[in-house]
Image (cartoon, rainbow, N blue to C red):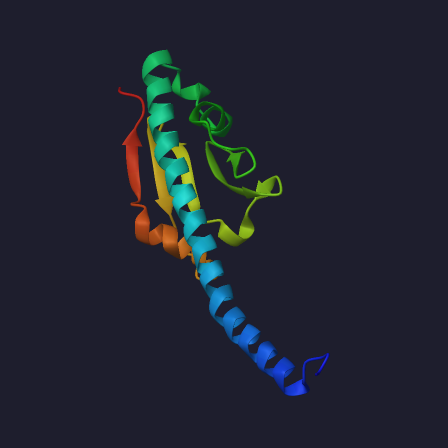
Length: 143
């Protein structure tokens, strides 16, 4: 009766674990990236609805609408978004996420909200967002 595994059995186990890891890790990375893109899409949709509602109900002057106003009234997470000028951008560690700096969500022309995704070849998240979000202006203030 033996009390240990042979070297051959251990090698087979290591090979099987390596194959499983080679299959599972890319799937996990793909799923995580997809989840981030879906989460950002949901943020943008929710933010548009919330700030249009706030603008309709409170009718703020266009001079009062800036990135801080959007961030406060849109219900966006301050860990994921940061106010920059008249809009908000994706954030990471309290600053603009330079790796994924492709989302423009800002107040333009004193009346519209612009949602724009610009191509950034080095970012898979930006590529996913570019496929799924339409660049568009949404009216916020009627003149």
